[in-house]
Image (cartoon, rainbow, N blue to C red; front, side):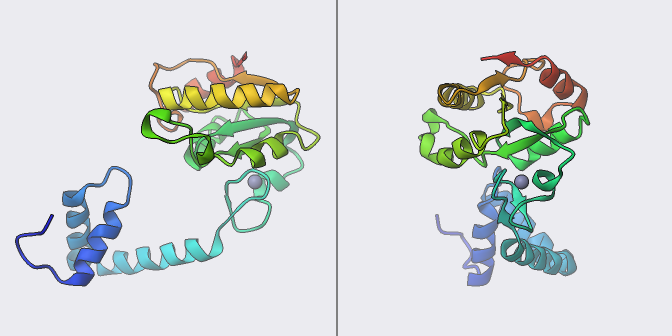
Length: 202
Ligand SMILES: [Zn+2]
């Protein structure tokens, strides 16, 4: 697709980079680029620096796979947390939602992905070996599958459940307190708390 006006290359590159964000098409990307460059160069600078900082300073926690500044993140290092329960979520945003219920004292594993056969995303999207080794590393007795209530989330839960059960772990799935198709990130904390409490063996 060639634009009607020849655009300067750095602008094209910025629009392309913004287009990589989920849910952002070319029109929105252009609007964002014009806004940042024309109306808010300070925010543009801050964004650029924050992005650089995040890319250089953040690692994946050795234990939960979430983002961390240290090899093992603050949550995993917290000895007050219940080491026998591991809650598996798709994204750090889902983990935040579950934390916001103040109802869960166990630990997490962040998939950073999901299995979605319809989108051509197979099991290789998930670092399964890492999850299995974390779940079988000794103290974990129960794995709670808190993937989204979407077709992909359910497929992921089913797939992980099979494998983890074969390893002798108790596997539960959070209850359906929310309509099918819901993403945990957008569900209110009270409902998520209920769904955790009412979790069912799979
Ligand atoms: Zn961690």
